[in-house]
Amino acid sequence: MSEARTPAEIEAAIVRRRQELAATLDELAVRVHPKTIAGDAKARAAAAVDRTAGRAYVAVNRALSDVRERFTDEEGRPRAERIVPVALVAAGVVGLVVLSARRRRG
Image 1: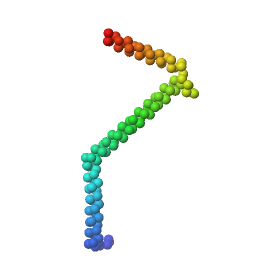
Image 2: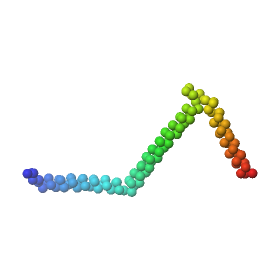
Image 3: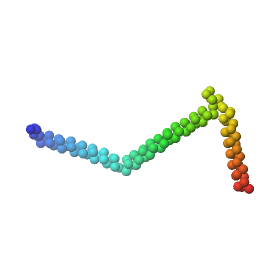
Image 4: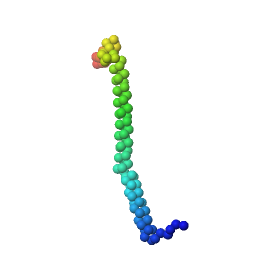
């Protein structure tokens, strides 16, 4: 059988249990406080934005590297045979946009 506890031991156990319950209640009060909830939501939103920005940075960096590889040779020099046609198409598109804008005004 178990040993019988003295009244002092029982009182000490009750005091310990009350302190544990008080600490638990304090922790719960902090967790459900509106400022804590808002702060947690803000932190989650900031983390989501950081993740999204990081993914966007990686995607843009990869795209720029791909473009750079297409328009430069292995030594990093520009490849005119690829740059000139793209520049001509871009100039044509800009010219069409300008003509279209002038026709709308006039």
